[in-house]
Length: 346
Image (tube, rainbow, N blue to C red; front, side, top):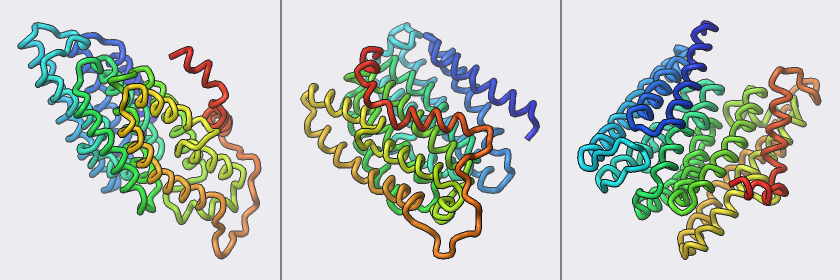
Protein backbone atom coordinates (compact mmCIF):
# COMPACT_ATOMS: atom_id res chain seq x y z
CA UNK A 1 0.00 0.00 0.00
CA UNK A 2 1.27 3.47 -0.89
CA UNK A 3 2.75 5.15 2.25
CA UNK A 4 0.97 8.43 1.43
CA UNK A 5 -2.38 6.64 1.16
CA UNK A 6 -1.75 4.90 4.46
CA UNK A 7 -0.78 8.19 6.14
CA UNK A 8 -3.93 9.93 4.82
CA UNK A 9 -6.10 7.01 6.03
CA UNK A 10 -4.61 7.07 9.54
CA UNK A 11 -4.85 10.87 9.80
CA UNK A 12 -8.47 10.73 8.60
CA UNK A 13 -9.22 8.11 11.27
CA UNK A 14 -7.79 10.40 13.94
CA UNK A 15 -9.70 13.38 12.53
CA UNK A 16 -13.03 11.51 12.32
CA UNK A 17 -12.68 10.14 15.87
CA UNK A 18 -11.73 13.55 17.25
CA UNK A 19 -14.68 15.28 15.51
CA UNK A 20 -17.19 12.74 16.85
CA UNK A 21 -15.99 12.62 20.45
CA UNK A 22 -15.72 16.42 20.75
CA UNK A 23 -18.99 17.43 19.05
CA UNK A 24 -22.30 18.42 20.63
CA UNK A 25 -24.26 18.69 17.37
CA UNK A 26 -25.67 15.60 15.67
CA UNK A 27 -24.50 16.63 12.18
CA UNK A 28 -20.88 16.99 13.36
CA UNK A 29 -20.99 13.60 15.10
CA UNK A 30 -22.43 12.01 11.95
CA UNK A 31 -19.72 13.67 9.81
CA UNK A 32 -16.98 12.27 12.06
CA UNK A 33 -18.43 8.75 11.84
CA UNK A 34 -18.61 9.00 8.03
CA UNK A 35 -14.97 10.15 7.82
CA UNK A 36 -14.01 7.15 9.97
CA UNK A 37 -15.92 4.71 7.75
CA UNK A 38 -14.36 6.06 4.54
CA UNK A 39 -10.85 6.12 6.08
CA UNK A 40 -10.86 2.48 7.24
CA UNK A 41 -12.11 1.04 3.91
CA UNK A 42 -8.73 1.24 2.07
CA UNK A 43 -7.04 -0.39 5.09
CA UNK A 44 -9.46 -3.35 5.04
CA UNK A 45 -9.24 -3.92 1.27
CA UNK A 46 -5.50 -3.29 0.80
CA UNK A 47 -4.61 -7.00 0.30
CA UNK A 48 -6.99 -7.25 -2.75
CA UNK A 49 -7.93 -10.78 -1.64
CA UNK A 50 -11.56 -11.77 -2.41
CA UNK A 51 -12.19 -12.24 1.33
CA UNK A 52 -10.87 -8.73 2.02
CA UNK A 53 -13.07 -7.23 -0.72
CA UNK A 54 -16.08 -9.09 0.69
CA UNK A 55 -15.26 -7.80 4.19
CA UNK A 56 -14.97 -4.24 2.84
CA UNK A 57 -18.38 -4.37 1.13
CA UNK A 58 -20.04 -5.86 4.23
CA UNK A 59 -18.46 -3.22 6.44
CA UNK A 60 -19.45 -0.36 4.15
CA UNK A 61 -23.09 -1.48 3.80
CA UNK A 62 -23.57 -2.03 7.54
CA UNK A 63 -21.91 1.25 8.54
CA UNK A 64 -23.83 3.21 5.89
CA UNK A 65 -27.12 1.73 7.16
CA UNK A 66 -26.21 2.54 10.77
CA UNK A 67 -25.22 6.11 9.88
CA UNK A 68 -28.50 6.61 8.01
CA UNK A 69 -30.46 5.32 11.00
CA UNK A 70 -28.55 7.63 13.33
CA UNK A 71 -29.19 10.63 11.10
CA UNK A 72 -32.89 9.71 10.84
CA UNK A 73 -33.05 9.40 14.65
CA UNK A 74 -31.50 12.85 15.20
CA UNK A 75 -33.73 14.44 12.54
CA UNK A 76 -36.85 12.90 14.13
CA UNK A 77 -35.80 14.26 17.51
CA UNK A 78 -35.12 17.72 16.01
CA UNK A 79 -38.53 17.64 14.26
CA UNK A 80 -40.42 16.99 17.51
CA UNK A 81 -38.28 18.88 20.05
CA UNK A 82 -36.36 21.47 17.99
CA UNK A 83 -33.06 20.27 19.54
CA UNK A 84 -29.92 19.24 17.60
CA UNK A 85 -27.86 18.84 20.79
CA UNK A 86 -26.68 15.24 21.36
CA UNK A 87 -27.49 15.33 25.08
CA UNK A 88 -31.09 16.51 24.40
CA UNK A 89 -32.29 13.29 22.74
CA UNK A 90 -35.69 12.93 24.42
CA UNK A 91 -38.15 11.57 21.85
CA UNK A 92 -38.85 7.82 22.53
CA UNK A 93 -38.78 6.77 18.85
CA UNK A 94 -35.49 8.62 18.34
CA UNK A 95 -34.00 6.85 21.37
CA UNK A 96 -34.97 3.41 19.98
CA UNK A 97 -33.59 4.25 16.52
CA UNK A 98 -30.35 5.55 17.99
CA UNK A 99 -29.89 2.43 20.13
CA UNK A 100 -30.34 0.26 17.01
CA UNK A 101 -27.91 2.42 14.99
CA UNK A 102 -25.18 2.38 17.65
CA UNK A 103 -25.68 -1.35 18.24
CA UNK A 104 -25.17 -1.87 14.50
CA UNK A 105 -22.00 0.24 14.51
CA UNK A 106 -20.58 -1.58 17.54
CA UNK A 107 -21.66 -5.12 16.60
CA UNK A 108 -24.03 -5.74 19.52
CA UNK A 109 -26.50 -8.63 19.18
CA UNK A 110 -28.75 -8.82 17.11
CA UNK A 111 -26.63 -6.65 14.74
CA UNK A 112 -23.43 -8.63 15.30
CA UNK A 113 -23.46 -10.69 12.07
CA UNK A 114 -20.96 -8.51 10.15
CA UNK A 115 -18.24 -8.15 12.77
CA UNK A 116 -16.58 -11.63 12.83
CA UNK A 117 -16.61 -11.81 9.01
CA UNK A 118 -15.09 -8.34 8.59
CA UNK A 119 -12.39 -9.02 11.21
CA UNK A 120 -11.55 -12.36 9.55
CA UNK A 121 -11.14 -10.66 6.15
CA UNK A 122 -8.95 -7.82 7.44
CA UNK A 123 -5.19 -7.73 8.03
CA UNK A 124 -4.13 -8.03 11.69
CA UNK A 125 -3.32 -4.31 12.11
CA UNK A 126 -6.66 -3.25 10.61
CA UNK A 127 -8.50 -5.84 12.73
CA UNK A 128 -6.92 -4.20 15.79
CA UNK A 129 -8.27 -0.79 14.70
CA UNK A 130 -11.73 -2.25 14.07
CA UNK A 131 -11.83 -3.93 17.49
CA UNK A 132 -10.64 -0.89 19.48
CA UNK A 133 -10.40 2.59 17.91
CA UNK A 134 -13.45 2.28 15.62
CA UNK A 135 -15.66 1.46 18.63
CA UNK A 136 -14.68 4.58 20.56
CA UNK A 137 -16.87 7.18 18.71
CA UNK A 138 -20.12 5.10 18.93
CA UNK A 139 -19.47 4.39 22.64
CA UNK A 140 -18.94 8.14 23.18
CA UNK A 141 -22.34 8.86 21.61
CA UNK A 142 -23.92 6.20 23.87
CA UNK A 143 -22.15 7.82 26.82
CA UNK A 144 -23.63 11.26 26.00
CA UNK A 145 -27.17 9.94 25.48
CA UNK A 146 -27.16 7.26 28.23
CA UNK A 147 -29.61 9.14 30.49
CA UNK A 148 -32.42 8.91 27.91
CA UNK A 149 -31.98 5.36 26.56
CA UNK A 150 -34.32 2.43 27.20
CA UNK A 151 -32.91 0.29 30.08
CA UNK A 152 -34.87 -2.87 29.17
CA UNK A 153 -33.72 -2.81 25.53
CA UNK A 154 -30.06 -2.22 26.43
CA UNK A 155 -30.08 -4.90 29.14
CA UNK A 156 -31.65 -7.44 26.76
CA UNK A 157 -29.06 -6.67 24.06
CA UNK A 158 -26.25 -6.85 26.63
CA UNK A 159 -27.29 -10.27 27.96
CA UNK A 160 -27.76 -11.58 24.39
CA UNK A 161 -24.33 -10.25 23.39
CA UNK A 162 -22.59 -11.83 26.39
CA UNK A 163 -24.34 -15.15 25.65
CA UNK A 164 -23.77 -15.21 21.91
CA UNK A 165 -20.20 -13.88 22.14
CA UNK A 166 -19.28 -16.69 24.51
CA UNK A 167 -21.28 -19.39 22.76
CA UNK A 168 -20.13 -18.69 19.19
CA UNK A 169 -16.48 -18.39 20.19
CA UNK A 170 -16.34 -21.93 21.57
CA UNK A 171 -15.92 -23.81 18.29
CA UNK A 172 -13.76 -21.35 16.33
CA UNK A 173 -10.26 -22.15 15.09
CA UNK A 174 -9.50 -18.78 13.45
CA UNK A 175 -8.01 -16.44 16.05
CA UNK A 176 -9.43 -13.22 14.56
CA UNK A 177 -12.95 -14.69 14.75
CA UNK A 178 -12.36 -15.75 18.36
CA UNK A 179 -11.28 -12.19 19.20
CA UNK A 180 -14.32 -10.81 17.36
CA UNK A 181 -16.69 -12.89 19.52
CA UNK A 182 -14.63 -11.86 22.56
CA UNK A 183 -15.26 -8.24 21.57
CA UNK A 184 -19.03 -8.87 21.27
CA UNK A 185 -19.05 -10.44 24.72
CA UNK A 186 -17.16 -7.49 26.26
CA UNK A 187 -19.56 -5.05 24.58
CA UNK A 188 -22.36 -6.83 26.40
CA UNK A 189 -20.67 -5.99 29.72
CA UNK A 190 -20.31 -2.35 28.65
CA UNK A 191 -23.92 -2.03 27.43
CA UNK A 192 -25.49 -3.46 30.60
CA UNK A 193 -23.96 -0.79 32.85
CA UNK A 194 -23.97 2.32 30.64
CA UNK A 195 -27.30 3.69 31.95
CA UNK A 196 -26.37 3.25 35.62
CA UNK A 197 -22.68 4.21 35.50
CA UNK A 198 -21.52 5.67 32.14
CA UNK A 199 -17.99 6.35 33.44
CA UNK A 200 -17.61 2.68 34.35
CA UNK A 201 -18.47 1.79 30.73
CA UNK A 202 -15.65 4.04 29.52
CA UNK A 203 -13.23 2.50 32.06
CA UNK A 204 -14.23 -0.99 30.86
CA UNK A 205 -13.68 0.06 27.24
CA UNK A 206 -10.23 1.52 27.99
CA UNK A 207 -9.08 -1.62 29.81
CA UNK A 208 -10.59 -3.89 27.12
CA UNK A 209 -8.74 -1.87 24.44
CA UNK A 210 -5.49 -2.15 26.39
CA UNK A 211 -5.72 -5.95 26.61
CA UNK A 212 -6.87 -6.33 22.99
CA UNK A 213 -4.00 -4.16 21.69
CA UNK A 214 -1.53 -6.37 23.60
CA UNK A 215 -3.08 -9.55 22.17
CA UNK A 216 -3.12 -8.29 18.57
CA UNK A 217 0.45 -6.93 18.73
CA UNK A 218 1.73 -10.24 20.10
CA UNK A 219 -0.14 -12.30 17.49
CA UNK A 220 1.07 -9.97 14.74
CA UNK A 221 4.68 -10.41 15.92
CA UNK A 222 4.43 -14.22 15.96
CA UNK A 223 2.43 -14.20 12.66
CA UNK A 224 -0.29 -16.35 14.25
CA UNK A 225 -3.68 -16.49 12.52
CA UNK A 226 -5.16 -19.83 13.67
CA UNK A 227 -4.86 -22.30 16.51
CA UNK A 228 -2.70 -24.79 14.61
CA UNK A 229 0.01 -22.16 13.98
CA UNK A 230 -0.28 -20.94 17.56
CA UNK A 231 0.90 -24.37 18.74
CA UNK A 232 4.16 -24.05 16.80
CA UNK A 233 4.95 -20.51 17.94
CA UNK A 234 6.00 -21.67 21.45
CA UNK A 235 9.09 -23.33 19.92
CA UNK A 236 10.17 -19.96 18.45
CA UNK A 237 9.24 -17.30 21.04
CA UNK A 238 8.50 -18.93 24.42
CA UNK A 239 8.70 -15.74 26.48
CA UNK A 240 6.30 -13.87 24.18
CA UNK A 241 3.83 -16.76 24.31
CA UNK A 242 4.01 -16.88 28.10
CA UNK A 243 3.08 -13.18 28.30
CA UNK A 244 0.31 -13.78 25.72
CA UNK A 245 -1.14 -16.43 28.04
CA UNK A 246 -1.28 -13.87 30.89
CA UNK A 247 -2.96 -11.30 28.62
CA UNK A 248 -5.58 -13.83 27.50
CA UNK A 249 -6.34 -14.78 31.10
CA UNK A 250 -6.65 -11.06 31.86
CA UNK A 251 -9.16 -10.72 28.98
CA UNK A 252 -11.07 -13.60 30.57
CA UNK A 253 -11.33 -11.55 33.77
CA UNK A 254 -9.38 -13.74 36.17
CA UNK A 255 -7.99 -12.18 39.36
CA UNK A 256 -5.38 -10.88 40.15
CA UNK A 257 -5.03 -9.56 36.57
CA UNK A 258 -6.25 -6.22 35.17
CA UNK A 259 -9.28 -7.71 33.39
CA UNK A 260 -10.86 -8.64 36.72
CA UNK A 261 -11.26 -4.95 37.70
CA UNK A 262 -14.06 -3.88 35.27
CA UNK A 263 -16.07 -7.09 35.79
CA UNK A 264 -15.81 -6.78 39.55
CA UNK A 265 -16.97 -3.13 39.46
CA UNK A 266 -19.83 -3.88 37.02
CA UNK A 267 -21.13 -6.74 39.19
CA UNK A 268 -20.89 -4.47 42.25
CA UNK A 269 -22.79 -1.65 40.49
CA UNK A 270 -25.52 -3.99 39.19
CA UNK A 271 -26.00 -5.34 42.73
CA UNK A 272 -26.33 -1.76 44.03
CA UNK A 273 -29.03 -1.12 41.41
CA UNK A 274 -30.93 -4.22 42.68
CA UNK A 275 -30.20 -6.12 39.45
CA UNK A 276 -28.74 -9.17 41.19
CA UNK A 277 -30.39 -11.58 38.73
CA UNK A 278 -28.82 -9.82 35.72
CA UNK A 279 -25.45 -9.70 37.49
CA UNK A 280 -25.67 -13.48 38.13
CA UNK A 281 -26.69 -14.25 34.53
CA UNK A 282 -23.93 -12.17 32.91
CA UNK A 283 -21.34 -13.61 35.33
CA UNK A 284 -22.39 -17.17 34.44
CA UNK A 285 -22.25 -16.30 30.74
CA UNK A 286 -18.68 -15.03 31.13
CA UNK A 287 -17.70 -18.66 31.90
CA UNK A 288 -18.33 -19.44 28.21
CA UNK A 289 -15.74 -16.81 27.28
CA UNK A 290 -13.37 -18.15 29.93
CA UNK A 291 -13.44 -21.53 28.19
CA UNK A 292 -12.17 -20.25 24.83
CA UNK A 293 -9.60 -17.95 26.47
CA UNK A 294 -8.26 -20.97 28.37
CA UNK A 295 -8.28 -22.87 25.08
CA UNK A 296 -6.17 -20.13 23.47
CA UNK A 297 -3.85 -20.02 26.50
CA UNK A 298 -3.53 -23.83 26.39
CA UNK A 299 -2.63 -23.78 22.69
CA UNK A 300 -0.13 -20.94 23.11
CA UNK A 301 1.90 -22.36 26.01
CA UNK A 302 1.07 -25.91 27.03
CA UNK A 303 0.53 -27.70 23.70
CA UNK A 304 3.67 -28.55 21.75
CA UNK A 305 3.58 -29.74 18.12
CA UNK A 306 4.20 -33.50 17.59
CA UNK A 307 7.29 -32.75 15.50
CA UNK A 308 9.19 -29.88 17.12
CA UNK A 309 10.65 -27.45 14.62
CA UNK A 310 14.43 -27.14 14.53
CA UNK A 311 14.39 -23.46 15.34
CA UNK A 312 16.52 -21.43 17.70
CA UNK A 313 14.49 -20.00 20.56
CA UNK A 314 14.24 -16.21 20.55
CA UNK A 315 14.26 -14.93 24.11
CA UNK A 316 14.72 -11.38 22.86
CA UNK A 317 12.71 -10.31 19.82
CA UNK A 318 14.45 -7.75 17.65
CA UNK A 319 11.39 -6.02 16.25
CA UNK A 320 10.25 -2.39 16.43
CA UNK A 321 7.07 -3.38 18.31
CA UNK A 322 8.96 -5.12 21.16
CA UNK A 323 8.95 -2.14 23.60
CA UNK A 324 5.23 -1.48 22.96
CA UNK A 325 4.40 -5.14 23.64
CA UNK A 326 6.37 -5.03 26.90
CA UNK A 327 4.58 -1.86 28.08
CA UNK A 328 1.08 -3.01 27.06
CA UNK A 329 1.59 -6.47 28.57
CA UNK A 330 2.63 -4.93 31.89
CA UNK A 331 -0.42 -2.65 31.88
CA UNK A 332 -2.86 -5.39 30.85
CA UNK A 333 -1.77 -7.73 33.65
CA UNK A 334 -0.63 -5.59 36.60
CA UNK A 335 -3.16 -2.76 37.01
CA UNK A 336 -5.43 -4.42 39.60
CA UNK A 337 -3.43 -3.20 42.66
CA UNK A 338 -3.84 0.35 41.33
CA UNK A 339 -7.64 0.06 41.28
CA UNK A 340 -8.22 2.58 44.15
CA UNK A 341 -6.30 5.23 42.17
CA UNK A 342 -8.16 4.32 38.95
CA UNK A 343 -11.49 4.61 40.75
CA UNK A 344 -10.67 8.10 42.03
CA UNK A 345 -10.06 9.25 38.44
CA UNK A 346 -13.48 7.95 37.34
